[in-house]
Image (cartoon, rainbow, N blue to C red; front, side):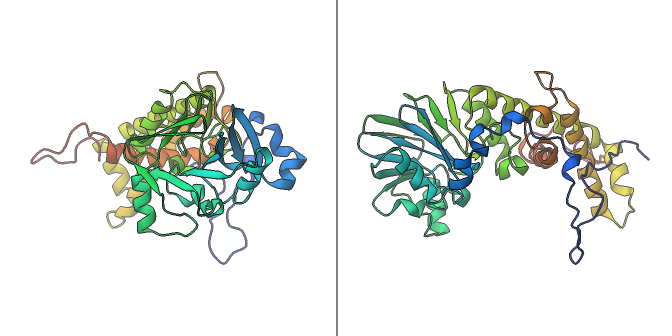
Length: 359
């Protein structure tokens, strides 16, 4: 029997069953503290604790708004305000943030994509605004109606330039990444880029590559971010806006996830190892063996990332928040994307048994 099995990396050995008091929650002490840089000064301020939002000018009338977990943006023009997204966690606080800096009305709303966690409060802008989004976003919102997410009134396919009140925003669609219709929003004068759910500055992003649908496209979008000459990135999540350095750190982390996932597939999908893992639980327990195989690869890839020193000499847990809790989910998702979205090195030939390399 092969000796390549990895013991699961878990935070608690207590199983989570319904009907018992303890649900197997991990002890906080089992994880390192988040890097101190993850929590900006506003997060612990009395104002933020009281109001529940923070607004900050990035440059020349372009503002970043955050609830300390979700963020959005708006631009003040000579003619009014262009808002980008409306996360429910901000809700009416998005309007309060705008009123903090201007009494001009909101004239335009840009939808980054159709997901309700980012535009689920868009009705707060009222009915007199023009809503701009990708044509796929409109199609999905017509298919799955939601009064809190009004359907876009203006759509585009590949690119659209919004010019108004002395401000220019360039909108582009580069193909499916986090989800179909997720767009790039570029303010060239302010050098602010808004692309949601591709990275989370200072952290490892939410599990499963931020619940993304096209992982190959999601990795491609990371590289596409760096094609812009930006100083600030509005990324949709977490405690801070992004900078080129924080974007590069996230790209490096996910490159290590991909590297670990590929190494895991190479090791555990050889015919001899794979068959060994599949039959170990018994020939009548195929799906147990399948789970063991997936877990072996996921744990191997997770261990690879958690133990690897990043380019500045730090462990990833010392450099990004959430690494010890989220990496296993990213590893699984990237493993599946390699199996499903990327090319196979070979295929089974007639009469060949056992199966070839790579299941």
